[in-house]
Image (tube, rainbow, N blue to C red):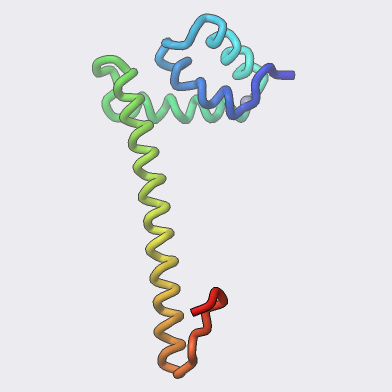
Length: 110
Ligand SMILES: [Zn+2]
């Protein structure tokens, strides 16, 4: 029933929230939010983050960008942690194999 997928609408929400979207975009987002409870939840959650902490200070636009950066940084950290854990698990596995004097045979030659 909606014109755009939820992904598209969620990409547009920052522009919608800070008022820099075009009138057509704003109208489309508004229509989608009216008909989509999931995106409404997503939007209100985003707004809560926006208005928590430094609420009322300066233009919300810059604060919003801070939030986006924070979220991105968090994602990067999560990926790094996952990578480190994976490396640690691999190292642990290798150490275990070495203790048992098992030769590790790599499936890709050498
Ligand atoms: Zn939606």
